[in-house]
Amino acid sequence: MKHIATGPKDVTVGVGDTIELHLPENTSRDYCWSTSRVGEELVLRDIRFLPSKNPLPGGTGERVFCFKARRAGTWPISLRMRKHADLVADRANMTVTVA
Image (spheres, one colour):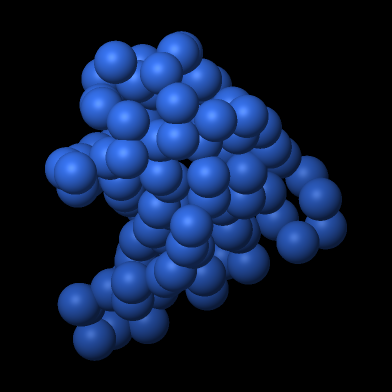
């Protein structure tokens, strides 16, 4: 079982591997990342926020999504950054191929 950390780019992993997706997020601007589509054989195991190491206000942290690959195939992951008022500010897409 491998643990793969990546940004929003296509990756190839094995069954049982964990994909850790890191996306920049600035919570002081009231925007946050969320999933809009996850392939059926990818399991979203965890979502967490890593705060900025910059002690000044407005530092950008990271939203981390952890997925586990359950079965071979090609599975999409789509995420979007949006303001809490439901306006989409950014999008990220990738494909996970499980071999």
